[in-house]
Amino acid sequence: KGFFGRLTEGLSRTSSKLASGVTDIFTKRKLDEETLEEFEDLLISADLGLGPTERVIDRLRKERVGQDVTDEEVKTILADVVSETLEPLEKPLTINPGHAPHIVLVVGVNGAGKTTTIGKLASKYVADGHSVLLAAGDTFRAAAIEQLAVWGERAGVPVVTKAHGADAAGLAYEAIEQAREEKRDVVLIDTAGRLQNRSELMDELGKIVRVIRKLAPDAPHDTLLVLDATVGQNAISQAQAFTEIAGVTGLVMTKLDGTARGGILVALGDKFALPIHYIGIGEGIEDLRPFKAQDFAKALTA
Ligand code: GDP
Image (cartoon, rainbow, N blue to C red):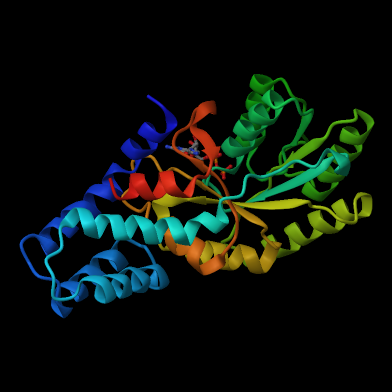
């Protein structure tokens, strides 16, 4: 099964909720204000966000009020709006070898999938012919350090680690120095995601960025925020916090497999207008792919 098939299957809990709602609301009814209101509630409860929901409703109202409308037609309009909302955000992360190295800082709360995403990206970039180095900057979790070491081994790339509890900024500095010595073109830096203590997190990420800039004033070249789809609306507040704290430049959404909250990516895209670089649909190396708005819209409305 290809990635699109697996994405569709992964999003089936989200899409079946939408599809059965659409069928309940629109079957054998003319489109009127009452059906529109019910549909609006459905879209909001499916996490699509206010902006995209209003655009779907407006389009239906303009084009179809007083007419019969099939659920397939409604789903097509929904897919179109989702696609139009997310297409401008479909931007693969590009590694600029001229940065020597291109420095990517990866942020997000614990459990979002940062370490796993870095491991998958390492393999991907190696396959693309890049020379990669990883920095195990989540020094608060011993398991994260080990986990990244395993991914590094799998991808055949070195992982700079320090003991549990060590200074993450110092580690980032050493990793960049090592990458320069070894002429590597990508450094992926993991970080700890303790959002419970916002000021500590802000201090720590701020320090990492300051230290990185001592070596490379224009870095980090990308700051990826990793968000877990299964947390639904919580992803919005995480994005709010991390964009304020860390100057996020792009998103990765994980765990779109088996969640009923997949609609949240539409709300996030609409609200933050940040590039969506990758989506994850599983724990394996092949389960992270560049985001494609049309495929996502189709899978969401399957
Ligand atoms: P971190 O704390 O942000 O570094 O998160 P981890 O990378 O340790 O991931 C937390 C858990 O989520 C691990 O068990 C991962 O295997 C799992 N995970 C990561 N991405 C995905 C995904 O796309 N789908 C699923 N089902 N699990 C994932």
